[in-house]
Image (cartoon, rainbow, N blue to C red; front, side):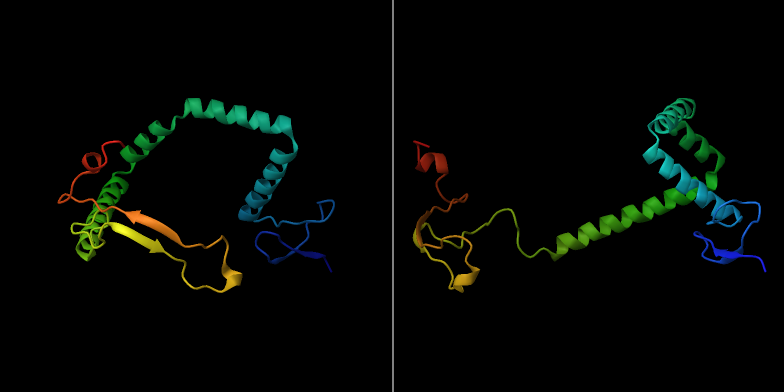
Length: 165
């Protein structure tokens, strides 16, 4: 009876190839052989500096001969159905994005960047920490005296009220 092994790519039990020396890890299926080559190349790139430099130089040379923008232009010319489908999908995405923005604007209840009518009055306030368990305190939580000045289009501007600043 011939020996078998489990392929590392397709995870199926296969018969060992008697012509191969050592332990076989991949079967002869094209997808499994491509996976084996990818693994070998990844290991080679990490372990062999000269191989990595040669691959980098080859890729650079190939990029000079095959610029990406020309590839995309040629693909679009050869596949007009792709262009039409992509345009319609982009129009749909744009429409959805526009509808989402409109819905978000309608859902806003409070204007977040400024208060029209100040709800806090100018004055001096005592700022005290909220009661907390002592184990939760990270910093010293002493009370502070704070002066709040509220400015709006109905009040005097900051530079007029405090000319020294």
